[in-house]
Length: 371
Image (tube, rainbow, N blue to C red; front, side):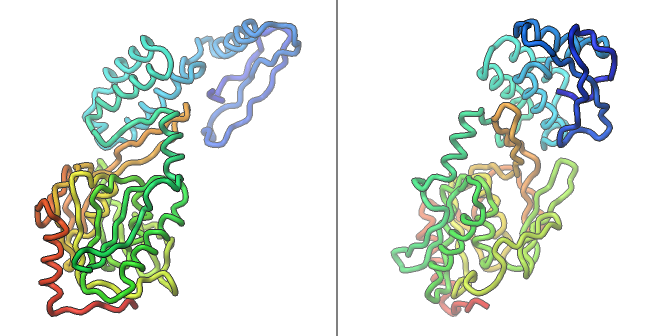
């Protein structure tokens, strides 16, 4: 509820007036108001609720805002506000019409199903297939799955038939970013435990999630300097930069896995073959983009899924989650992507094509010892 009710004489019988204090996040300009507090315990629940709504409505001579008394309405209102203020494609939407349509759906269809359909109408108006809504039950299941030991590891090391090292990085969702980052780095260290001129970085089937454990894990493979950026609807870029002390996003430094004893792979490859396919999506595509323009890297496989944009995650009032597309991916050379990534070498057998390139490129090259 808003904490900006005007103070006034209570219309409720047998009540006292109690000041409402500001909650965290409330506007500092809100005016504390009054709330009708029942002294006696004799009234029924319906009478008490009627008295409460009477106080809310009559404090300013208005009816209560439906968003204040209906959790579904409050959640839809939150989604509409977030979409208008932060969505990449907000400017293309007729917001009065969209709001009216979403409200009609919410009114006509009860329960969580109605709210899901109403939010779906807002997402449809945005026209961005990367934005999506997870109802409370689905949001909880995703969170639990992200921490499950039954899921494949985010990173693993293997050898190809030609005995070349391969690092596989998979999509990941979860809360322990430090552990996930360390798992990717450990897999990289294992892959490069022995000297090798070439490395296959397998991002096939990486459907995304949180990209940062992936980035922190493979950071030694990326050249210093600008790696890419996210560009918002106003054209403002938040650069991703590799610095000696960590990774910077939009000028904010993160030293999750700083250079030091035990964190660097024993050896570094001279050439990197990035493998992708039609299931490489979202953060998987963002990681692929960080290698575009790096002179010792080439990509092999099939065009990616085409979710080359960045999402922000918002927890909604009903316990659901809104993943809202906020910006587009940009590579280190300034190219902004809108759709699928086409690999340097389009092929049905990415491993074979990558192996051929690595063998030729490494014919006169040696591995690089890690600093």
